Image (cartoon, rainbow, N blue to C red):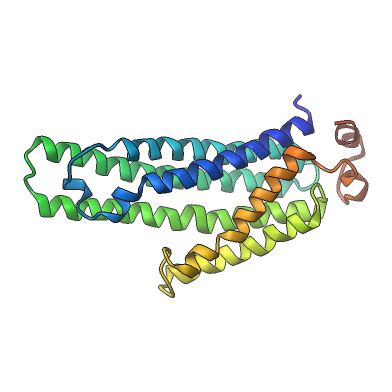
Length: 242
């Protein structure tokens, strides 16, 4: 059985992987997301393909965080641990739907080049539709669902005290802000690509980064068992001796 210390390092590393890959993918997706005529253009699509690969890695990392945290968190809040695994898997699945929509744009672009550029207006409309699918998956997955799983894990960490409470508190605040922002974007209060839309995810980013660093550097707090309310006695030594 993997020790809690090793699980903490794995979870922290997975969080860092999701941050690096998601940011890099967003940069590489620039041409397809911001150029309405990308689907009928020419040139290399390697950047978009690399971005898609990075987002696949990001999705795996998202599931990896939940899988690594589950064995430890379930000892304190089993329902929260199960919910976190389910929500993280859902977030990863939604992200992959967005990846597939952009890969479809690349495929249609290649076919358009082979067909000599016929049906340009129709292809542009289809391309914009596929990009719109990606944009909605970005709102649903890394915003709505991410906010929900952040709240679930942060609350479980707050109650169990497996990590310092200021880090868990940052997750509670960040998850609430991100969820509220996602609702505002959904109903048209402002665009997702805007100053408020860019500021809202920052507390969640800070929560995940702080959590990752703490887990890698310190691991789960060994004294958490002494403060927990619902920890079976026969499971305490595993944490205390990790």
